Amino acid sequence: METPVRHQCCDARSRSSTHGSGQMLQPWFPGPGGGNGCASVLSAMLATLIAMNFGFSVVISTAAVLYACAAVVFSRPLNAS
Image (tube, rainbow, N blue to C red; front, side, top):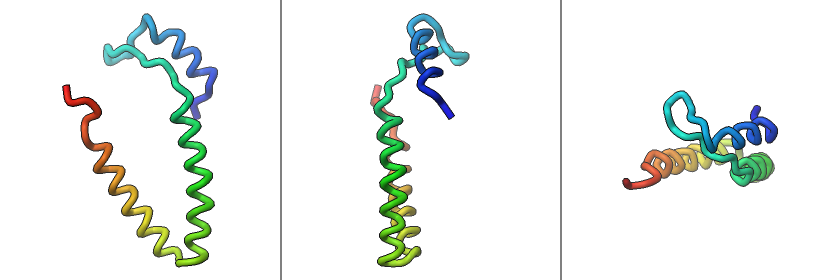
């Protein structure tokens, strides 16, 4: 698990060093980690409520559709250059 201390060390080095691939390291930004943690907690609660009201097969079907949508969205390059 990555910790904020590790990211701070990486952030301090990112301005002048490169990774093994030759690309510059990017500075750490805490927003995505917080959003991921929040989504994990909310999705666990929501999945439980949906399973209790509609059944576990609805939860699995919904998850499959959402993962398929995410795969389509994130399979495209982020920048067109």
